[in-house]
Each structure stands twice: as structure tokens, then as C-alpha cells.
Image (cartoon, rainbow, N blue to C red; front, side):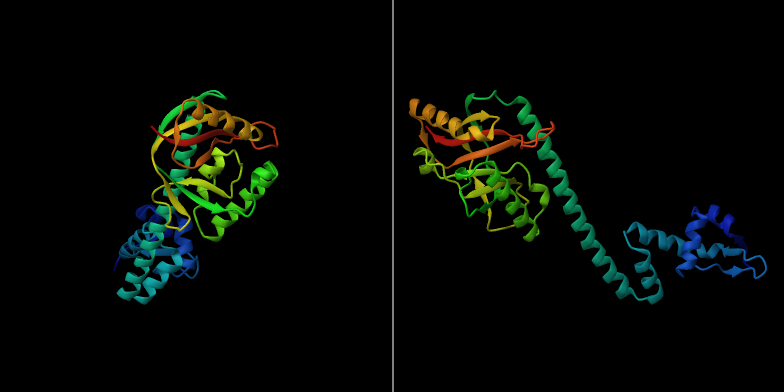
Length: 277
């Protein structure tokens, strides 16, 4: 007769806790081979360890106990295959989500690094900027006509837009604005487009576009309300040096960490315009 073990001994033998064995018993996943009617002691046989190994293996494949029970009860390879295919897709989706989170963390680190080494307020630079991708949303209002309160409303709409389109919300950070080249040249402050930077693996969308690489005239500032003033300073610098503007004006938010008690959004901005020489 096959040797049987009390639940405590079988727990040590199989490296599974007693509470887990009791749970498996309750769920009909792994029943004791024998229960003493007088003492109610549970006993298991060595041969049951193979089923336990199978349960643990399926758990490692990210299966729920209810799914494992259905598979074991069915004893049908088709059900096992279908479950594994479903689990494979689920794991892929989870990996993709984690990749978005990892990219978001990397962008946050880069944002802080750029802020830490950025030129001081008011400094103008000529920089090469690699190509970038943005997710943009047209707006119904020109926030330059209103100020920070309207900007906050537009930000809220952008966030809702991304949620509605089931886009990774991790990209909702440091939203900037774009102004048409002609409006910038004429100092006609009009913008009906807000954007966030995204990666090349961002989900395909008609609202994703590429900003080409090139040389940019840039100026830095730390006050949202002074954008027009510094944009004019940047334009004057371009005119004085007889540079030619080749594209649209971008207001990029390098970072916005409200680490003080200030209620107002704290931003460090980089105004930029592409040039040709």
C-alpha cells in the first residue's frame, strides 16, 4: 500500500504551505487521499505531488486558480491551448503597459536632467534638436486670449481625449502648444493645438505627427505669463541675425514639478523655432 502523509508532513515534502493545501482542498483542486473520520486529519500520497507540480506550473504561467480547476476538470487539450493563448495575449498586454510606464519614468528623468542643465532664464541658444513625435489635440479656443485658467481647462480636455481614445495616460505630461509660423512672425498670438511628446511605439493615431530634426533658436523662461514677452525677444534675435524661420513655433514645457506650496502650476519653458541657414 502506498505510504500516506499527514498534511504537515506532505507540506514539508512538497514545499507547499498547509494553508495552501487547505485552500486547494476547499476549491477541489487537490483533495486529500484520505481523511480520518475521528481525528479529521488529512492525508496525502506521494503520487499526488505530480498534480501539485502541475498546479504550480500553471500558476507560474499566470493562470488563476479557477482557470486551473477548469482545465484539470476538463482534461481537454483544446481548453488548455485556448487558455494558454489567452494568457499569452494578456501577458503581452501587461508587458506593453509596463513598457509605457518605463518610458514614462525615463521621460521624467530626462525632463529633470534637461531642467537641471538648462540655460538660465532669458538666455537664447541655437541648438540641434533630433526629430520628435507628438500626440496633438485641436482646441476650440485660443488660450492666449485667456491665460492659465483656460490652459488648465484645455489640459483637462486633453486628458479626457486620451482616456476616451484608450491611449496610455502615462504620456499625459508637460503639455505644450504650437503656433503657426506666420502668426509667430506677425506676433499674432494664436494657438489652437496642444500636444504631448510621445515615443515611436506610441499607438497609431491620426493625431500623431513627427516634428523633423533641425537647428532651432531657443529661449528659456520660468513664468507662463511671460511667454509673449520672451517670444518677442526670440523673434527680435532671429531678425537681428537675419536667420530664416523654417517651421512652426513650439512652446515646450521642460518640466513642471509643483514641489512647493504654490497652487499655480510651476513650469520651466523652452520656446523654440526651427531655422534654415
